[in-house]
Length: 304
Image (cartoon, rainbow, N blue to C red; front, top):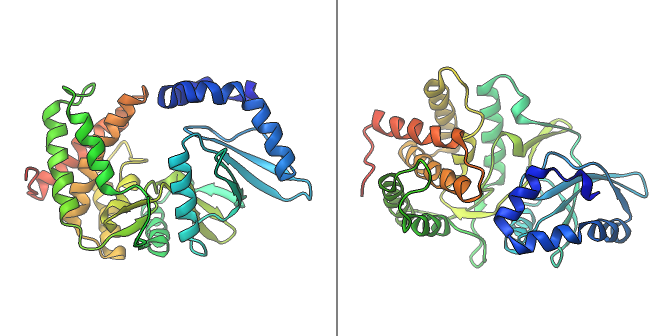
């Protein structure tokens, strides 16, 4: 099984988790064997891998499921908690889980097509808005879930450096001020998916279901950010992006100014993260300029 792990995946997890990833990889074959025995299933060739191992599996009774193994215990617990709290809504179901080794057994969605496969961008955005509306719930009173303030602190740590790759320190400073302003002015906290883009919304029979929640506590405007930063067209990008924003604002009753500022500041943070991970994303870098220009179009204040 270890031979089928892509080199890009191995490089990514080593870059993020260091020695922990190396130890995990050394014991990967045994982990898979133990997982198959404990949960009475046979793991198949994994899906395209990014930060976690995710693969289809067939149980001994013939039922198809998905096995997910997460290296970060903190991220595993946040995802498991979000799935538990959103249970019964438009979110994938957890069948079994094991915190110690970061294992989840999830339902297999059928046919499992992603929202990215939809050709009509407005239809796709409307579907995404409907999924968000069903899943967003008031934040739990007490939890150790990550928050928008944690994101601000991540950018604050990055700011102590003298710039990240092509991102000048002045841009990071501006984004940090925006983060601080928006976090200080949150009216009501919600439990958000935290990474809801086209590839994390799948077709399940006649409905659409979210997968892979990060579990983030923040304002509702933050929920649309990842969608707005992904699958951007080559042509008429500003026009299409504005249409997406308008659909979200209308369907979710969001503040357009906060959406624009949230997306711009998070684009800076997300690009910095790709530099840290050793997987710098030119696409994320371009979104910095896109949303900076949109903020300027609406004469939004970018310094506080």
